Image 1: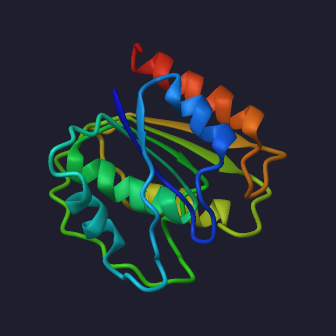
Image 2: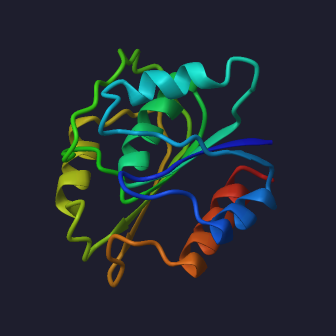
Length: 164
């Protein structure tokens, strides 16, 4: 199992979260500079030409990128507080054929003050695709940061859904 993890705007994959992901497969976690590269999504799609990425996981800006990368690769995604509607850094979005039907497990903190939960829900309603399975989790006390314990729980739920 090859897992692509995409970090947020000013973060990286922590050693604790990497250890959790490594229970399920080999982790690819590129260091992305969203500020300097407005084509980060395209760059990610070109980074691993000889690797069959099986699943995509991302948080915040990485959740935004992960959403689009998973669509392009036709792979399931686990997204934490994805910045789908608005971002503080401009990013180009590759063409999308809308023929994807891969699972998207989306975790939204209802008290996130960085990525608006309402904006994320609006984006999902405006970009509704009837063939995509969306497992939407609205967590009432979750803010923007994802605690390691919650990360582990959601990763386990995600991989159980994928039968791993």
